[in-house]
Length: 169
Image (tube, rainbow, N blue to C red; front, side):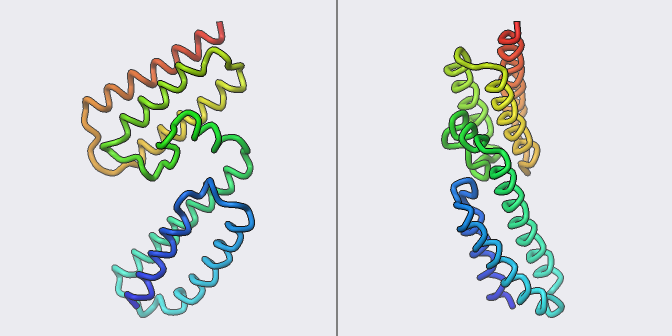
C-alpha cells in the first residue's frame, strides 16, 4: 500500500509542476490518468492506515487544486502571461515560501514600476489580479513569516495601491 501511495505521490508531483505551461491535450491526459489512478486507489483505501488515508486525501486535493488552477488559466487567457511578466521566476507560486515571499513581492513591484507608464485600466486590473494571487499564496504559506518581512510586504502592497490610484488621476 505504501509503495502504491509513493508512486501516486510522485505522479502527482510531476503532474502538478508547471501547470500553466501544460497544453490542453496534455492536461486532459493527466486528468484521465488521475481518474484511473484514484479509482484503483479508492478500492484499496479501506486497507490504508489512518495516516495513509490522510496522505492520500491530501494528494488528491493537491491535484484538484492544480486542476482548478489550470481551468482558471484556460478561462482567463493572459493571466499566466501577466504572472510571468510581473513575477519572473516567482510565477510558479509553489516556489514561494516564508523565506522567499519578500523577494517575490520585491520582484513584482520592480516590474510594476518599470512597466506602469504604458498601462491602461485593463492592465492595472491584470496587475491587481496578479497581486491578489500573490497575496493568496502568502496567506497559504505555513510557517512564520518574520515580522520584518511582513512589514516590507505591507509597504510594497501600499506602494502598489498608491501607484494604481495615481494612474487613475
